[in-house]
Image (cartoon, rainbow, N blue to C red; front, side, top):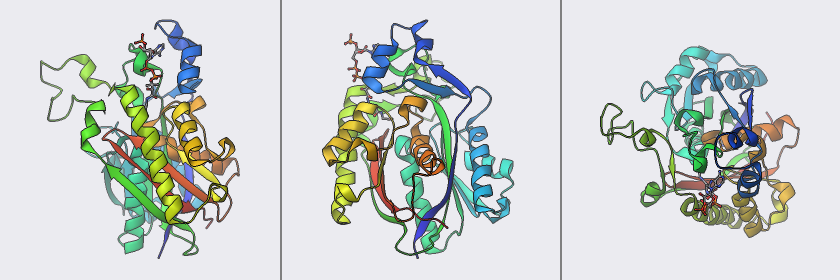
Length: 328
Ligand code: UT7
């Protein structure tokens, strides 16, 4: 049996923050941000926690598939900004949506979270552990963002993408191949160190900045280009795909320069590479499902399209997933 994304939707908050917002109080400029990152604006979710962004997208996918909350039997939430350390955001979502028959948990793999969650959901469906998995990639990055640090304030935004994973309509469609990795040695370059058992929030020695993102941009940049290109290239070779066979490359959206460099290394032209970073900034686990959902909403996906998703992020974590678009 093979598994597929049977429905996808996203939620991006209403509040638009243009680059000019930061010019008012930080030593930065619209020109620097656009040139170095490709970001023009991002969305800030001011109303509530991460789960509140998941719910509207989840309601949309249930409506698209015309299924009731009770039919979902597993919920996976990929996030580094859960509502709480515990209970899992999956439990909060289960309660808010009324998915009475679902079990589930959170997955922490930073920007690669959606890919790791997709592989998990596919394994559950293929093995018969679950029939309909609600897979959510969501992050409220503003909850861990130092808005007074120009090195990070301008980069991130909030958002959520949600899909249903279930049996594909044809075994030749759906998720075909996967290449996933972690390398803990890279952890030092991108992290949030306080709030866990290493530096509990109550510890007086914790400095405020330790509750924010810490990122060594250049170290992450170099690894992101190399590993996303390597992983995608491996899947292309293994599945005998030439650049012309790829309908869409959907990369994690951290920096337009990274996205373009990956496309160039693979000889995949710009028009086949999904870009949303200009409008959303980096929404961590939400970037890939938001990009895929926008393609679907804009009717740019057809049955049988060859799509490769690829991501790189904190951990380090990275990889790629090859799928053939299915329509149930
Ligand atoms: O999603 C998880 C994975 N994350 C990524 O993939 C992110 C990877 N890294 C990047 O995208 C880039 O490294 C950044 C966008 C984070 C930074 O761009 P960069 O071209 O690598 O800049 P840099 O860190 O080398 O900094 C160059 C200069 C520095 O000034 P000095 O030391 O040369 O005087 C920074 O302080 O740019 C300065 N700078 C800024 N200047 C104006 C950093 N941020 C800003 C800013 N406005 N917002």
